[in-house]
Image (cartoon, rainbow, N blue to C red; front, side, top):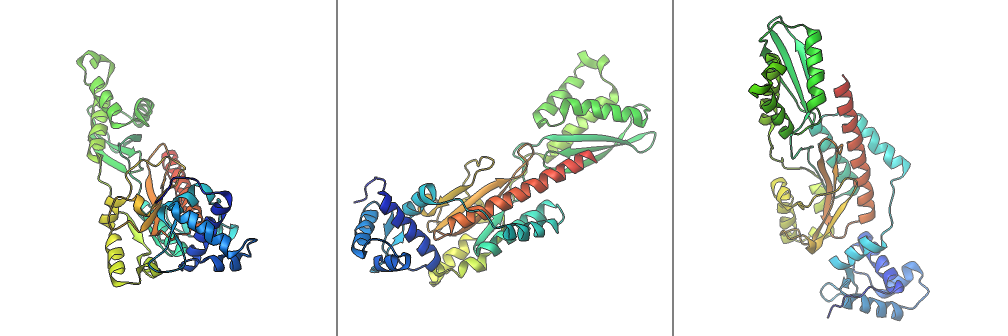
Length: 357
């Protein structure tokens, strides 16, 4: 019967060694091997007693008739939440990864694909990344550029850095100086605001009571901005970029034909899109979902390490690693955090350069 008690300090230390040895070897861990490998100051009998207590707590289990033990999902969770130290990538690892991103143009799709590729190669497991997406479209900036005496180009930049343009017929003859003034005026009222705020502004300029306060061109521009943003709408999330399937399937967990086929099916992008936990990820946090914590088949024997990236005031994408529960969690979290920070910084710089252009 499984109890709900925290392990003793010694038992917790043994659990930590079991997790780390099993992650490295993929072989059940026996008491004698544990004592010999780590030169422990207590006997195999003592270790066996502590392992029995850990098994009784549901933190380790034994596969089939093996004398060795492996961590359970609960054991991994206790390890991740209580015992795991915080890894940092070496300076050389950081430079190697950073160099790859600075060789790539700051295109959203390319960055997502590169992020997944970098993580898959480094961790030899599946990596996923989605392009940045906004749940609510917003106006980042608008510009007005005179083309002819009768036409003006309206440029609308959304919060996720998408650009929409439309040529407007001028209701009145104006010069570029006035267009620049009008753009600045409207940006002061609407820039950084969601679609609902632009709708409120449109209703204001079309209110007959405000007719004397608003020019025809101002009404035309605000109405067009709203139409362009409405066209953006709530675009559906695209399936994630998936890299590293081949690498993950080389793991010993997938040596059997059934396990191999189940894992292959699980890695389909559209299925992953549905299986990725839908809970909100706060900026700066990494979510770890271990084994049977996932409610979706066939992910019960897998773990997710996920984080959001992107400027907090603009938009975000999802980044993560998926593999068997026998993940090197500390190493995986360190890589996901570092790549996430690179993507966030690159996108922030890209938005700033674009808006200051």
